[in-house]
Amino acid sequence: MFILALALSLANLPFVTNRAFGIVPLRQGKRFWVYITESALTYAVLAVIAYSLEARLGVVFVQNWQFYAITVSLLTVFSFPGFVWRFLL
Image 1 (cartoon, rainbow, N blue to C red):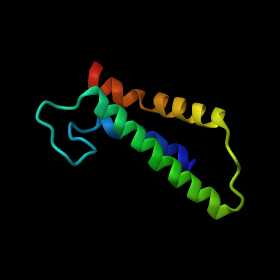
Image 2 (cartoon, one colour):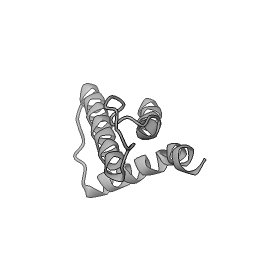
Image 3 (spheres, one colour):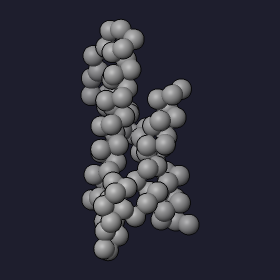
Image 4 (tube, rainbow, N blue to C red):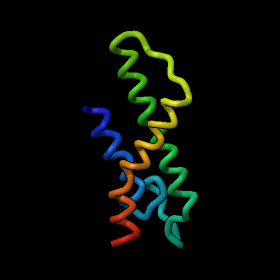
């Protein structure tokens, strides 16, 4: 449950502010590639946290490409509320 709540909050993080990575102010605002880069970084941070929690519990299971395809899709779906709030409202 903790990982899902963390994924939901991290997926919407790029859409909260107009600053790149929440720190760097941009003159013209964010471009599409900045949102993609932030989403990839968010996925990497979430993967490291989940991996470390799984390693702390015991054996880490080997994952195939299907796992990563599903988790990227899940993170994309989780980011939909932030996308709607930023671009459609």
